Image (cartoon, rainbow, N blue to C red; front, top):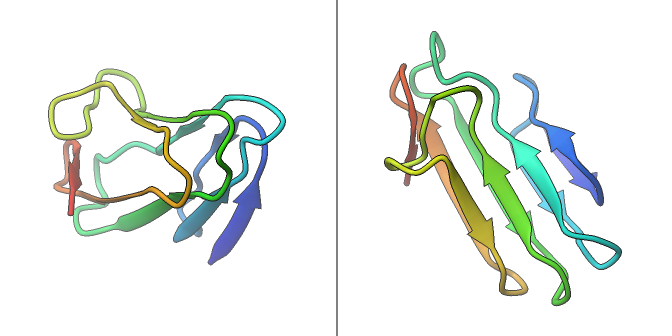
Length: 90
């Protein structure tokens, strides 16, 4: 499912694509736990040219070893999948 967000958001199991508009403020999109959902994928897309969108993990999980990833350029995207324990960039 597609969702559009312009403020802090926690991704749900039913989401697939999260389109982020940070033109009003910088905000964080938090991924759900990677545990128990190996193979699940999400795409986080930034559509504005103004503020950063920070993609964060649940608890101590990581995205390719990092606690967060920042989308700063307009039209940048982060496509991640769960390996059952953490998130990996595809």
